[in-house]
Length: 183
Image (cartoon, rainbow, N blue to C red; front, top):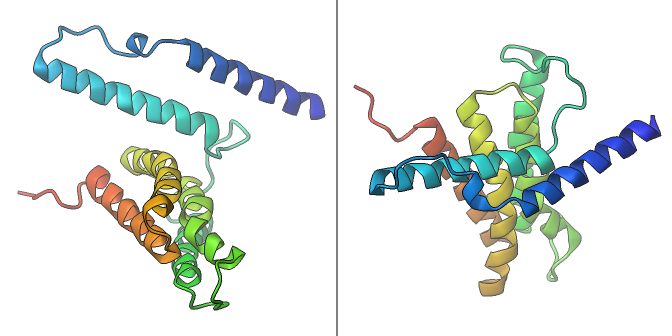
């Protein structure tokens, strides 16, 4: 059992070393480089890098069986409710509504990171659409960048949580087409 875990960790390390060694231009499709194709190839590169990074570091199933959290099941609903409740609870913690204190403490820090630690993994655990999975992959990479960068400019747990929430719903709106007009 422990040997399997060691082999999996060694495989992950090899994959990471290979990803670091491989130049980025090998990931681009071989297209004629017009303005449109440059934009398309950069977009394809971005998607591929996000998918590979999320597949390497984000939590995923440990077995090759089909995901049991399909729409309509209790498990699917549990993951969905858990994700959004954690988001709301994290907001209450980061806004200092629960366990209030005058000093920065672990509860406010926990609230600030709640979207990345609990909401995104809970929603990724469900069997969701390709676009939603892609949005969650982008968020898995974007939220830590926001959480580390924003405090350099403004030291506010509530602001960081709010930025994460805006990024969350903005990414969903973009990837799921919430703002597109339907005809």
